[in-house]
Image (cartoon, rainbow, N blue to C red; front, side):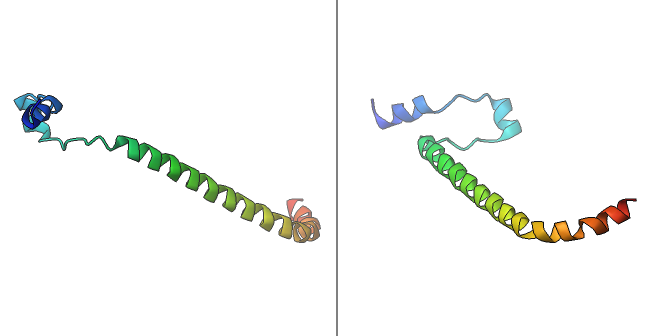
Length: 80
């Protein structure tokens, strides 16, 4: 097949009404495989960052626990 025939095969026929209403759609390139691996990598990075934040929060809670125990009688007084 010639290059022109390959291009025609890859193009999708769009009726004139759809073209008028929505315009010409950009052609999709076969780089979808790259975006899938990039999105998986991004999800892994986001998960790692989330776990780091949870770890930081847990460390803060453990550091504040003794102080909360000291203030619990005061908080109990205000609850009454």
